[in-house]
Image (cartoon, rainbow, N blue to C red; front, side, top):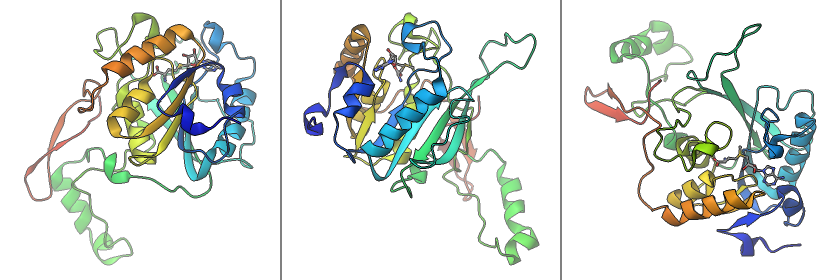
Length: 288
Ligand SMILES: C[S@@+](CC[C@H](N)C(=O)[O-])C[C@H]1O[C@@H](n2cnc3c(N)ncnc32)[C@H](O)[C@@H]1O
């Protein structure tokens, strides 16, 4: 069995599945798994039965997570259909990452324009930092005040209902984080667009929500290193694995450049609104 401490802060080249078998149980606070989707022609994405593949991953994650830890599994809308993961982890949400700019190529059915990010926990979640991931209230101040003053709200069992001036829970449909484009400054290489590299803002939301500074995050399929870069910036420790040596090198170069400064905001639109005190509130994001 490998000592997890010796892997902290490293991007290890190899097969994530054998690497995981060597790690001791209850090692991680958070796992972010953006692995094969089984939709592209990449050799690494050639998985015959993606649901079964994902079930085996979820079993490993259940062993590797600390009690109360969280795992996010990326995939297509059917990525956990017809498998029973319930003995291992609890599915809390299927987050829809909506990408309105995806090419609408469908002719005989509806074009798929979202990925899912399945949010699992090992028992009851230890961490859910809602205040760190709030998004703007998308209703006007006057309407919010009217809602709060409806007699049934004021006098009823939801009498304490108020719109939080710092923003709302992002919910489970995320349309406010754009896919990377050829023009994105954070894009490491054109070859990685669409099927590989994810926006830092997307990983940032998951990491902020489900870990605290100093926590240990595992990324078994780290590609160009988005999760390690964001962990470094947010003061989380990480262990990462990637099978392709070229991507490992890209990720390491990117890590070397990562600074401790603020994240790039290029994938979010700045949004200005008015707080409950009438003062302007500059929020983090708005719908595209
Ligand atoms: C969707 S990409 C991850 C992208 C990453 N989140 C990023 O933002 O750059 C999936 C990655 O998994 C890697 N991969 C596929 N099978 C693997 C395996 N068995 N072990 C480790 N890495 C693997 C691929 O080489 C690919 O880079």
